[in-house]
Image 1 (cartoon, one colour):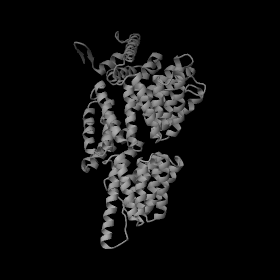
Image 2 (tube, one colour):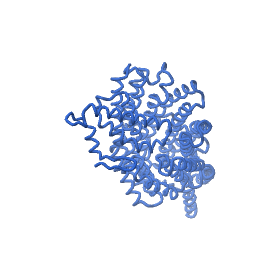
Image 3 (cartoon, helix red, strand yellow):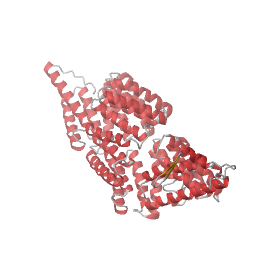
Image 4 (cartoon, rainbow, N blue to C red):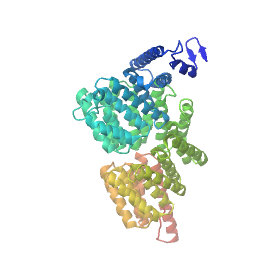
Length: 585
């Protein structure tokens, strides 16, 4: 039960529990002795946390060593006896456990945050008015968010805003950035409302820049957070410009290999990928992966995140076969470090299942997909946003690989769950409705697809500006449904309107702009205007190959449309017939 080693003493946890339990009858476990030992343990833990902060040790490796001791200390102690020093230890536990979203750790983090809040309320002079109360409230909101209780987190932050601790109009800048304002903005973005987060983050950035200057570390963090919100809102050019500026300043102020610089470079690479600048995304992800491996080692969590992001960028470039080994290595390296049901592991498994489906390995893909759904439902709940999204994403991959009929059932279930859990007009609900309309249309059920596409467009216009990329995508979905249903007049008008808006709002070679031009050419082909359609598609194909790449999904799709129209035109010409029907692919 007790093992003496050269450098340490190992004690079985049951023996530890007994030793920590006061017993007036035992000369070794009198309440006074246990309280003294607890104070000493508290001091040792506080010293360890302080030394780690000063020396900037690896957060992950330090956590692996110290967190079990902290949890044993907190479990053995009576919350009634918690004091401000205990609250500091509780804060660290909350910060570490909140990183494991949706797991049991998130619920433990909530309990610790509530316990820290009560300790400060009882023992800190000023109670709710003391600044530490505000920071503890922010930690509680963060823990609630990590546990999936987003509504409670938002209600807490919005309710406490008038009290002033969160950084209201008259609050000190020092209490606002990186505090409840940023946490509230994060909650809004996770709810799919980046437009509500952006004003908060703009205020935060202005506050730090005005007080500390443009290249102060906290200002750089605030600017990076704002860039992230722009990206989530689909404003990729603004996001990229901000991230590029932050990266340059961060490398100058912090150094090329500082973790914050590497994080900014990662976010910039992701922004390139979302803007379909795939070559730059792959190059930047490769560089970031090398640097993170050099600084942190092969199996550090952020190294695994970099490898996952690189795999997605490589897959977007049209090479899923080269992305698969990257994900398989992540799965192997995560063994022993991640619980089988850890969210990150499930996201890698989900991406791998989609790529396997694309390279024609459906059996392996389905096995992984079902394992992912089961695991996510166990850790997050069957109606969690991530569970709904994973099922919808996999169904969309069935559509892309030419099996829309297999997608309809899964998308119907996902849509029903999204409507129940997220609401009729949540962005995810609308997106799934659009995908289901596409699946039905490609399955030959255009009559069912049209009302779904119209509803999706209506919901998108209710939640977004008319020229927002999401609204443009909904217009194109609706136009395709009209075309497949034979309503070419409405199809042409809808697609032409989307193209006009895309050319004004987005760059000429943005994927949505190219897609709208391709869709308009297909409407022309369905009208019998074959030469014009072929000419338009050849032009779109050339630009897609030049600006997006020859192997990306959109380029391959445009090439397929062109081949089919040219082939069918040749067949009809050979038959001496002018009638031409253009099926969807």
